[in-house]
Image (tube, rainbow, N blue to C red; front, side, top):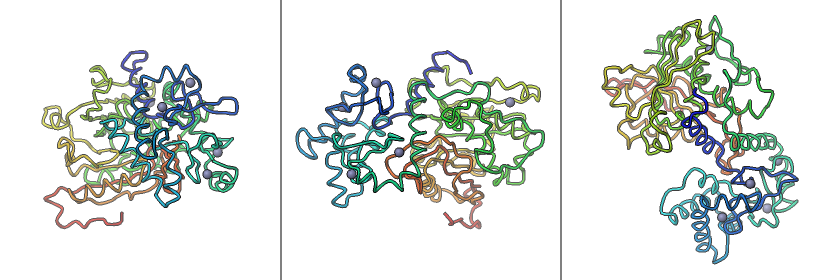
Amino acid sequence: MASGSNVETNRIRIFAKITAPFVAGACTECHKIPSDDVHIKSCSRCRLIWYCGKECQKKNWTYHKKFCKATSSVAADLSGPGSYLMDSAKDEVEQGEDFQDYLTDIMNAVSEALERSLDFIETKILMCPKVCEICKDANPAVLIPCKICYMVFYCSEKHANQDFVKHRKFCREYFLSLLCYHLVATKGMPLPGNMPFTIPTVSEYKPMSGTMKDYIIKSSFDPVIDACLTEYVSYPLSLIYALEHIGLKDGTKKICEVKELTILMCDAFNCIIGTMGQCFTWEYMLHLLPKLRKLNVMLVESREFYDYELDDKAIKSRTVNLCSECKSRKCKVKISIMTNYSVYKNSLGYKKPDVIFNHEVTSRDEQDAYFPYPDPEVPLVLINVFKETIEESFCVMRKMEKHDTLLPLQLNPFRAMRPIKMHMDYIEDGDGIAYSNCYIVGLRRQAKDKCGTISLDESL
Ligand SMILES: [Zn+2]
Ligand SMILES: [Zn+2]
Ligand SMILES: [Zn+2]
Ligand SMILES: [Zn+2]
Ligand SMILES: [Zn+2]
């Protein structure tokens, strides 16, 4: 990739914003993280975000001002003038209200006060307030952090002890998530030099086995960098894994036999600026599939997101500088970025994708460019942090078309290893730790007119 260009820098910067948006207790401006020596104070007006000092607070004020005022006014409505947004959390939870529901109500109220929807940083701020893990007390005068991870807080010794057994299981991952946050927020997502983990090219195909750990040869000797880099590797590994189960064409062609592969990703904002828009991400497919020579990756995004600080140069196709081994095998990777798939589909250069690789299919119905997905017989691989999001996708899909599940919904063995702490307990058995590409499912869809006799897989 072109290094040092403004477009590239911009893209990495936005990506850093998205992937490391906020951590409760870390300085919102310079991302200094809390430790025994670094004490970070909350904004005295809203108590929702933190600064290491006056200077950072001043710098951040232009961005924070409106949000600060909006949250303060919502707090005043909720519990009287001078109160803070999370002040009523403890009482509400004591009275049996679900904390997540409480936060959702608050987010809606703040969004109303701002007269616009919340951006991703604001959402994270409200989803991850600094409150006691047990009773949701938000009084900063009493809250003490876990002295190992600094990612959870307790109002008292008693509540810390009460949470000890549960927290012990996640404390290390929380700390790793804090270090990853700091790295990404201050330096951006680490970019591997020439392939992050030297996955060597193989001369004979080996079926996927094991987990992500078995595929990476640690190159940086820094567990924080390594954890971040797995976010790139996760996509190609997961896709090969899914296609082993689904097959290509009508299921008759094996993934190990393909010479050319065309991947379509809709809703690709994150791909364009993030890990999937990077060429080396896809080069792994060439390394693991010895017969593959040509890889076309099409990223489609038409949402308003798209003009988010990206300029035209970023939209042009990118051809990749591959490693010497790929070059000697005459391999090619082409990444194309487009805003309207329908236009492309009706153009002369149209190439039918072999697989659609997506995060979700919900809310696609508003955009007829996307849904129903083009070419119903093209297999679909869904991958997401949240199981629930994939399940929602199923509900939408069921109404539109029938499908056979060839890779059942499961915990993805090739999920990324960088932990992201979520306060809302989204993750089953994970106590609020999320990993990119955590869940995966592979489907073969049936064209509407042909699906009469095919039974629906109701196992999900
Ligand atoms: Zn600071
Ligand atoms: Zn504030
Ligand atoms: Zn407590
Ligand atoms: Zn801890
Ligand atoms: Zn290569």
